Length: 92
Image (cartoon, rainbow, N blue to C red; front, side):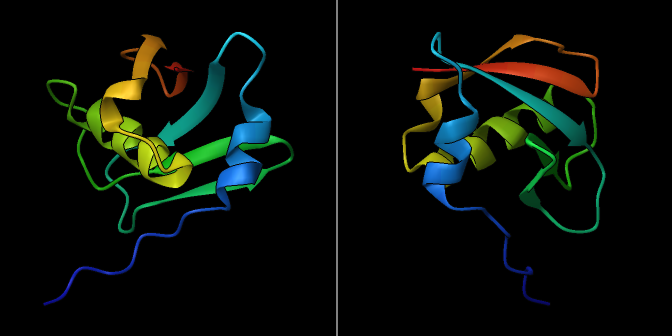
């Protein structure tokens, strides 16, 4: 069975959520049926299929953010919230 398409918002909309110091706040839902990023009420919400084990969900979210911004995954790193649904990433 083919994987469903990943839903991503416009890169400019995601960049608008990054503050002056390169921080991006994200609310994560691990173990979701579909993957994607959604902007609701000025917040970025991420849904990933990966389970929250051994950092797999964090890596999946970083990959989605990088894909949405059109940059390398190495430019997006988790700075806060490794075990929380509320995370903060640094985009360089």
